[in-house]
Image (cartoon, rainbow over all chains, first blue to last red):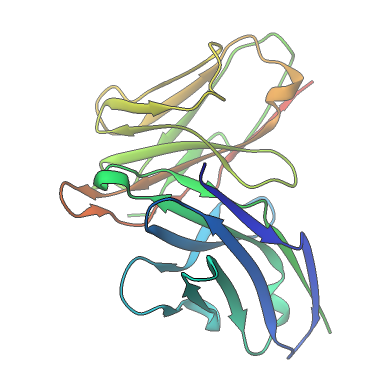
Length: 116
Length: 117
C-alpha cells in the first residue's frame, strides 16, 4: 500500500536556523510528490512539487526539496527560518497510475515552530 | 478567479442532524476532491469527481455521506444523521486534468469546520 511518513510531528528551530522537515514515501509506481503548508484554520497552500525531471525542486518562500529515489525520501529544507514560517507542513504523494490517479495521500504533518 | 471557495466556513450541529457543505472549484477545473482532516492529522481522501461523474469513493465515506456535482461545477457534501466522530475540517480541492497528460496540482479551499455536539 502506498503511504507517506513524516518523521517528527513537531520541529522547533530558531529564527535564522536551517529548517529540515523529513518525508519518506512508499509507492510501487513512480510518484508525484508535494509539500503543502497549512496555517491555523486555513486550507492548504502548495509549497512545491516534484513530477519528473530535476530532482531538486524549488518552491515558494525560499523552500526547496530533493527527491531521492534510492532513499524514497522527499525532505523539505529552508536555509534560514523566518517567524512567518511557523505552520503545519504536509508531505503528500499523488499516484499517477495509468494517468488516472488524482487523489493525494498525505502524511500526518509536521508542526514547525520558530523561536525568536 | 478567487480560487476554491467553501461554504460555510464553520458549522455547529446537534448529533443526529443533517448538514450540507458546498464547494465552488476554480472555474476551469474539471476535477474536484473532498478530504476530511481531523485534529492533528493529515487530510484523508473521501471522494473525487471528474466533471459530474464521481470516479472514486474512499471506504471512509460511509452510507451517511453523499457527494454530488450535478452540473460539473460546484459540489455538495451531505452528512446525514451526524455523529460526534464526524467533527472535522472538510476540505475541497480542484485540479485540471488532461487525458494523456495528467493533473495539474490540486488547489485547496479554506475548508468547512464541522463541530457535532
